[in-house]
Image 1: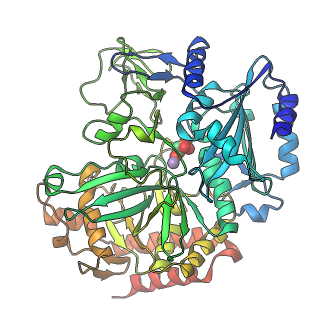
Image 2: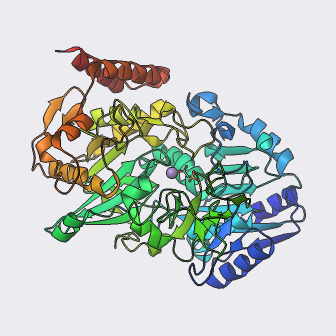
Length: 580
Ligand code: SAT
Ligand code: MN
């Protein structure tokens, strides 16, 4: 590792090299340095103790998927859904960019651990970066410093992560993954998913590649626990594309009468799940991260009270608006908009300004332990046994509120064909339906067809398999009104899921899968009647034949790597849709 650091220091030519130890004292020192360098702005320490604001470059506010590459020895290994670059070409191109890129800057050496100390699944990475913002965020999002070096002892490998913001030029931005070398080189961006290399780059792209070889799953999933009034705890994981409410679902606050009856929801993770099959043949999930990097806009006491608590102290805000009194504001916060503030770029803003004050992809970074509803097993290296997997997308039409897969294979088909409208979490147009299998389209580090096969195969080792469900909280009526209230009320759907897991409720067979009888969803206390629920659950066959054809077209891109089982699932779906 030392040799590798020296080599890269010789390449990037920083004026200093700082080895991070991950201590609180170091965090304080580096925070002060970040303020002095203008990387962080101190906030009102009375109202928001330990909180700071970071404003990114205006052109560096989201993941840039078109600059993200999987650099495997053949293009075929990366598959049809990834950008590919020849590794030699990528190394040589990026070497020219990294060359002297840290002149007059400090290179921070950030050892970090994804997963729990002592866990066989845990992975050690070392990120070399010239961004203090990255260092401070890595300290929250990963187990950083001494603990990672400790883990490195006795291992023969670590993920080599090299990062420089360069001059933030989007024309020269590259997020390159070399899974065969266990290496990540990221240049030209300081944004979370592009620059905190433990997160999407290691825990998902490199992770999924390793998972396929080693027989486990690295997934873009939340992990949550639901305690019912009898005290029984059920663990669920859930895959949703970025900015589709994963964090809100993971931290769900039960509606008042559910709370009174004894329902409780606790969180293990809000973004990434590593899952493996244990000796008892059960699927177990753990969260390799140690913090949240959550979307801020829309967060308030009603939509996510736990997140409001989490970000109320010792957290880093990115690209929110700054109030005159040193507090922060964003669209969808409780209360009325401020008369005046500084927007996410630091420009004066009033409600009359014809633009958002906070960036739609503005974020907070805070430790897991801030969460008042943190599940007590969050730090258990064995993870938790998963009873159900929930998949979902953002679809204003066509896709019903809830469907249960007939079996594991059908569930894999539902995941493989998941469609969702694009959001501000990635650069590009917002609101277009795109296929995002298992919400992993931007994060799968190898051929997507082989990833489907891996999902199908892993069930051979499981007994029983978790049940798989598909939800859509975002369906709207002809006037554009949401058909389902969402947020805490989603527990009403989760309750049905739990009953299905316990075989405590019947379901009706539909062409799409098992669906609830409307009377089995508890609507008490909602301003919503059965007819409206039926609308949220309705299936329009014509729309669905079109949808199924679009799914088939997407699957065909996998060519010879499309597992025969999924082809068959597709044909069976069409057959069911065409049956009277
Ligand atoms: O990629 S990030 O981790 O920054 C956020 C997301 O898109 O899920
Ligand atoms: Mn995510």
